[in-house]
Image 1 (cartoon, rainbow, N blue to C red):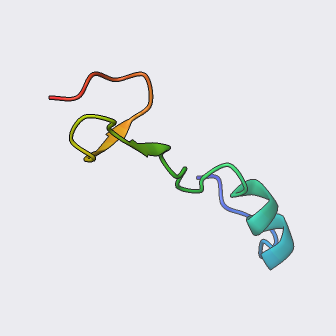
Image 2: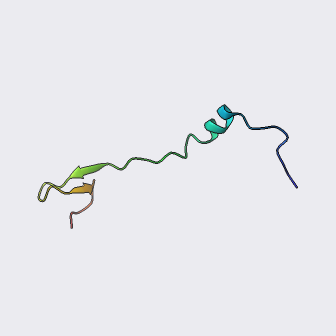
Image 3: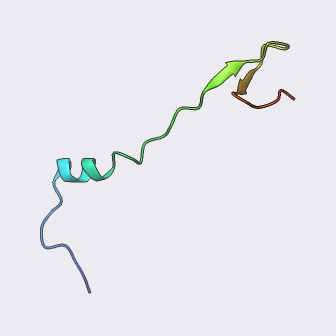
Length: 44
């Protein structure tokens, strides 16, 4: 069974996790109703 030989340091762990963040969505106000909608999407 494969197990780590050394404890992973905080910096090494955090460098690996740089791409695991939550990406904020770009919401814009609809010009007709003023509701928040995604860009390039039709308002319902």
